[in-house]
Image (cartoon, rainbow, N blue to C red; front, side):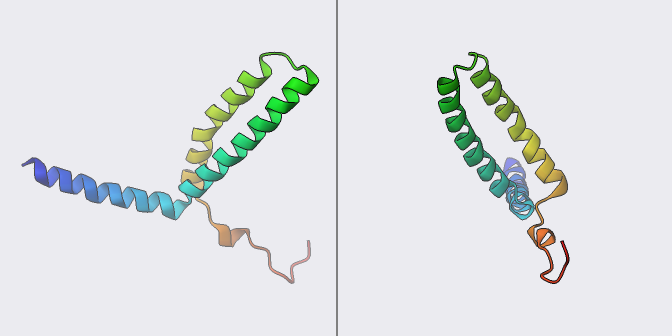
Length: 93
């Protein structure tokens, strides 16, 4: 009885993962994490050098933590369609 439910959930999970790959969620998530890490490292150096208040670093990290699911939701909603971001070579800018 439960074997049929398990097989159905495995199939739907693989479809869900394929949909995530199609929309570019993994690429955007990885890019966000790498850039957030780089920004946090630079901010850590800047906070020490410029004697910023103690709330700056936790505020920056909290903003990055809250921004991560928002970026993923935005990417899911609108997708990541890289061919639409290309410019025509003859197009005036």
